[in-house]
Length: 248
Image (cartoon, rainbow, N blue to C red; front, side):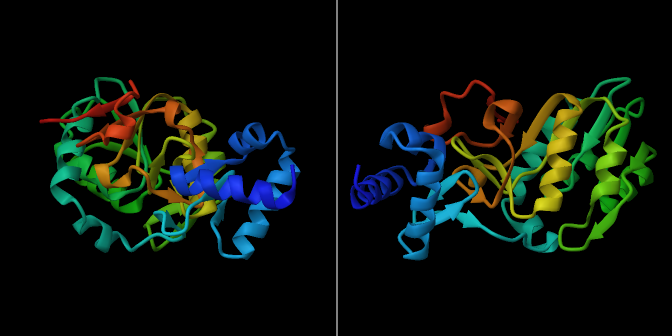
């Protein structure tokens, strides 16, 4: 297949679906991975699409490259986040070892926690303080402090995670996409999320409906790796059995 023909097919696919993965294009174009990646780089250089890790998204697609300050994110979709957080908090049982990821929705869980027999681990300093203030047993990962999202990141934090086997983990995300999975803009934070997911027996992503269709730069998990708790399931995602709509 000629280069221009591949370009045309790639643009048609990405503009139709909004995003596409390298593996999908390899099958559709009957081309090698190196060829597809080179084509995407060329199209991105010509500003025809946006290249992301593992594929590409259409120009004008919802794509995030950075985190907003916590104070800004707390104000967005606050009612929906409270609904999700209250439901998530009720899932914690006696003797659970719980990982609570940094994030505004995960942080809102704390006000609804009733089970003081569980033990909590977090990489968010504010979460740790709030847990301690209500009498919960809490441990904090060691490492580098990232002020934008108010969490601990880095190699030391990853090493800290290796000693835990969590019964349940609750995570925030910047985006949920059926091709690119759960995404976040920053590689150090994605590494923590990825490692913590692996250490959890049950995994929950807490995300209001606005996160669906969003794509950030780094994937930390695939859509089938956790149960998603949300306030409303977009039509495109209603066939996923691991996405739960919280109604009360």
